[in-house]
Image 1 (cartoon, rainbow, N blue to C red):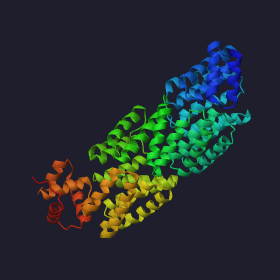
Image 2: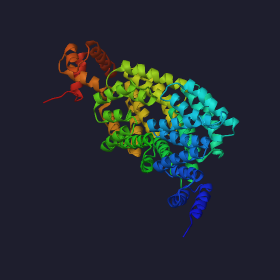
Image 3: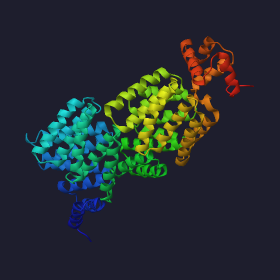
Image 4: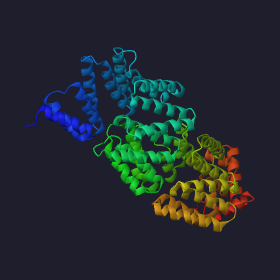
Length: 541
């Protein structure tokens, strides 16, 4: 029968070889037979964390913290409380995480003035200050102080966290180039193997997440590939593998590999248990894939799960409401979220929904805001999103020629980054612009190309929409609200009566009517009435 020492020795050897599961099993067996000392508890806590056993890891860090304080080693006790507190913060458990960071602060009172642990304690406080505290400038100073302490004490993990935080703060402050340079420097250290596995995983996920936030697709893809390789090099690693799968799924979805993306996100869902922000992101990506394929019931369920785990269901849910024909619900949902945050994806969705609802003035304002964000970040994907929004608004304003110019630029970018679905959506708009300019052959060619792309992807709702556009011709240039107004005009109602029935102002009704005349090249109300009857837009008994 193996002795306690035998289990402990094998656990230590497995840990040194980064065989995390074996390390956990062996050290756990030793701990069950005779409680481990603080040194081996730290190893077991790390192995538990890296194999996805968050609850076990937390209990072990807690035991190690207590044992180290009793042994008169407050510096190491601070580190145990730091890792546990930071992990809880990153998993969305702010209150409990804050409690452990307070324990780290208390243990720090027993430490010497010049110790590396003082730098570690700065990191989570600066992280909260930069995010929920809304003070990136103040957080930058704290991260810089932590980095200098790490450099002075030759602590690669601490130095890395400090540099990472500085880079993220600079990006939040609008210093994109300088911030990205710091993130590249951090990743050079991580990929060279200069930091611990726990720190490396945190840095990988933070850098990729930041690149996604600023639509830096090249870096996001590059570091996701690096994260995949890092995970594959440690077959028993569980933590971070789920994050890797989510990032991979997002990139696959962008490139049109929807079936593979769905497999990846389902695998990611199996990896996460208590990491609430990550679980929410998994369900949101799952919902988006279902929505694009037209499985609205599955998408609805996934959006609800995403919301339960703290991830916003917008803009995806609003776009689903549009596809379901529930335009009022879509408009209300996206407008509420925009009151809370101004993320580019939300702005782009709002422009699309506002135009469909006939509120071209609001769409114009938000499209201009999105263009400003694109100019500031200067990321190709953001320029493409802004171009699509601008083209959508110009079409609604009757400027088809101007719309064509910006839409073709947007289409080129989507083509260059190999995003077929987004490229197809832009081709639909190009087809509508051609139709406004009287080039029906060109319009049909563009719509046919878009339909072929959507068919290849399995984008069932988009296939149906394009086929409808191709059949109905110019009438489809109208927004849903404009169709409502046209039907009531054809029914003989005055502008005042229409305003009363639709709960609009007479001025808004007049604007809709002007748009209808422009888009359909009609000279009068009587011509509009004739057009409505000719194209089956009037309800008949």
